[in-house]
Length: 157
Image (cartoon, rainbow, N blue to C red; front, side, top):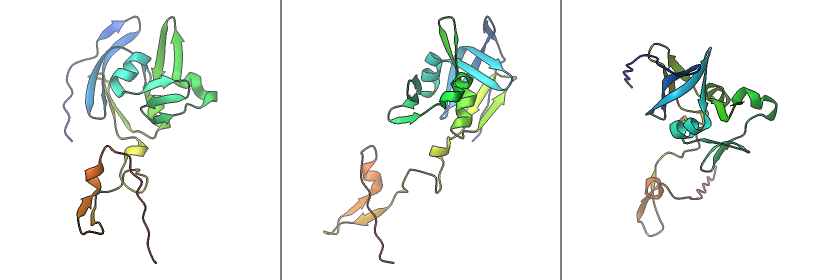
């Protein structure tokens, strides 16, 4: 994948900088972020806008997927500053085994695939295949994308 990042870091407000967050191959411009060392803090509203995850009492969630935050370490992920709630997106990436690349010159942050999205034995996605039913009509797993299915397998060995 080739990626061209342009532009420079710009100040947004009191201790805040503009940044580009690339998450699941979608770039989102965020007017106010906080960078502390290698940590990227975003508001919870920008967390949802850039990643479609939202902070809930049970953890960081999107649809049916939810990652609980360790209660003893919650302050490492969430901070309150006045009426603004900040979230450490890089700490979350570490929690879910997600690689992060940062280009300070362009104030860009790229978030790779989380551990649950990677292919291989750890993947929760079954590979596509086609098999005939009892009447000989061929069906493909891809025909059922977007639908919940129960896949039962059996082997005689």
